[in-house]
Length: 111
Length: 116
Image (cartoon, each protein chain N blue to C red):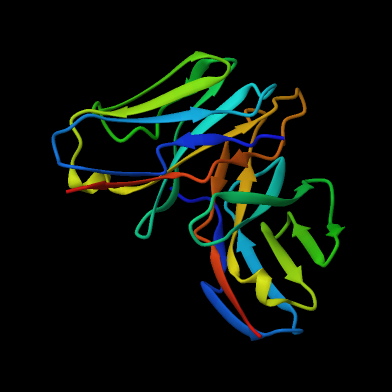
């Protein structure tokens, strides 16, 4: 069963706007990761946030984690057409390295 | 650096045939994962290995599926006999394993499998 559930399922914005995607999960985690998938390609790791962290930045990406609400958000600022992709959150509940992926958010950035 | 390499990229075959998917993980990574992605079920973990040993195969759908990792640089996922419902994109991913856990996974570009 899926651990993470992403919201919204699909998002369409204009270039330059910010995009926010949310992820909720059910059980305790060690860390949460975000991945991007371009059409016809494999997933690419974007950012990892550990359970004792609340916020993390990487370039135009900002991730927050609220373990009390079991939720995370991914913010992409100043979006570009090249950001068009599906975005997945994945939770790591133990030290096995095993990840459970959500269903993903499909982002379309219109030029 | 070479990433995770999967072959073939596309496979079309008739039901009942044996299908073998191949994966070469990133050198030095000691964890390897096989996933299946479909529109209906999303991304599902089928099996994963640590140091060439299968750790969790609870995601393998049924006995028709088997996976092996004979050495640190090669893994196969086999379906025998194949059925139309096995049609999906199959991904292999690898990661370094550390005691702290929480390492990113590196994905190949997948094998798009169509069973007619």
